[in-house]
Amino acid sequence: MAVGDRISVNDRMQTGYTYELVAPVGEGFDEGFTPAHTPQEMLEMGVFEGKYCNDCTAEFPKAWFENAKLSATPDPSLNYFGVKSRQPLRVWREKGWIYGPDPRGWFQWYCRYYLGRRLKEIDRIQIGRWRGFARHAGQVRANCDPGDVFCRPRQRQALLQWAHDPLI
Image 1 (cartoon, rainbow, N blue to C red):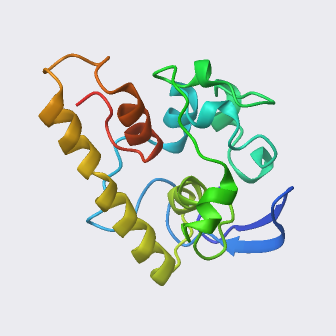
Image 2 (image 1 turned 120 degrees about the vertical axis):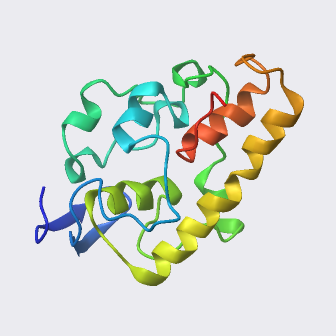
């Protein structure tokens, strides 16, 4: 995938959507957006109970899924911290957490942003949400002994699912 490529999306949640890559893969991020993990690393570490990208793998690089922890049904044991970590998509919709052309939410936006799609207003919103999520790292630091990675596993799993470092 390279700058100028057009990606056509046809999966269970979105059909007929096309976007253009305008930045090199993994580069050209907003200076205030410094994720700790790539989408591939996140999928390999174990996120969203293995149930997030199962029907949209054709949109993204095959390498992202070669060692990804995926499941046909939600399986908390596949998560990095082995805990339940996600809410149903309907909850995200009810709370107004789905923005723009990304019906799966933040992680789908991040995958597309990482590939090189840029949508000025949507990017601003999602990067702001990512920054706001960092407050959970502060809570982990305030309530856990340094090096105790088993303290607050749900909060650490959530940090990972937002591309923050959960091992702070």
